[in-house]
Image 1 (cartoon, rainbow, N blue to C red):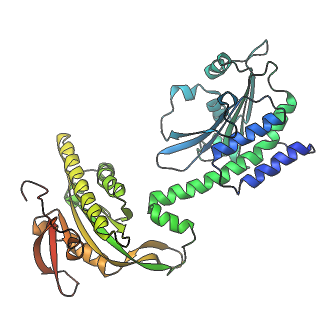
Image 2: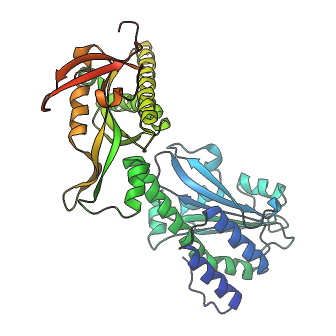
Image 3: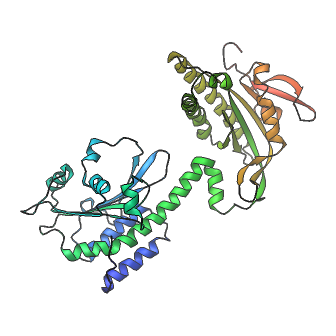
Length: 416
């Protein structure tokens, strides 16, 4: 695939050594690609544009592209593009030379764009010629099994690189050899950064940015935990069981995604951190800062109200589409919890535990019987004077002593 050409030119060796060191640097990949292109130009390569495309693991982004164009006149800067994940291929992509390379397992594709040797069998090549380019070189690079994986349709391996020149003579054979020489080091440096981003994205997606950040910092040992004060939110969709009995599993999953989309947006906007999904509900925390407890409590309450309003609006849309609708119950509590790693030696969960979590769960289960969508504990209601009203004083299952429970002062619905 790529021959191990001996590197004897001091400039080439210096560039490769520089690229190897870039694997440990923190500069964004678009800057790395741009800096590499500038160094190639300084070494005499007639390069005018380059693009590096890497596949990534993200629920919404399918690939990342890093571009540099000499005409932009911005030294050592480049552009980053995030391409949305899609199961369907556009007609433009199907007709592209890069798609042809992936489909046929072609690892290198060189095309002259002008003169008697011009080959413009792909529409994109004619477009490049019209932009003033004279030469086009595309190559793929990855591990030993890259070619096999590409042929099998694997979308998360290797890199695709595109190099273009506006020089009248295009690239020389030596220019192509130089590109091939630095591609392994360049893609390795980029992949190192992409892998870090993938790790961060996956952690943010599955455990949230607060927990993900702590894990990446090394807080991964069992028993590593700290005591924090936080506002707790436990939410649960109503009528989930009855709805799941009358719709297909696929329709239920789709419905849950729609409901989670609308009810989590205000939680995130208010600074809440969703720690886990509880089937048809979730547990979120709003960490408290000294002197800002009332502000945080207010944000948690407003987030709960906004989530409830969003769910009610979605439920109306679901009913209009003749799909079963669901409601939402929320409990808000404030207290001290242990925040950290809990589990077995081989399976850990970074979560919050403590009596406050149990109390919040018991409170949420009383929403229906108390005729309210949101229940607040006395600890959080005391920080919101004039914004809550007493519902009742009662004992919570498994909790010693009587507890005062509150609801928002303003009715959330006309029936309340």
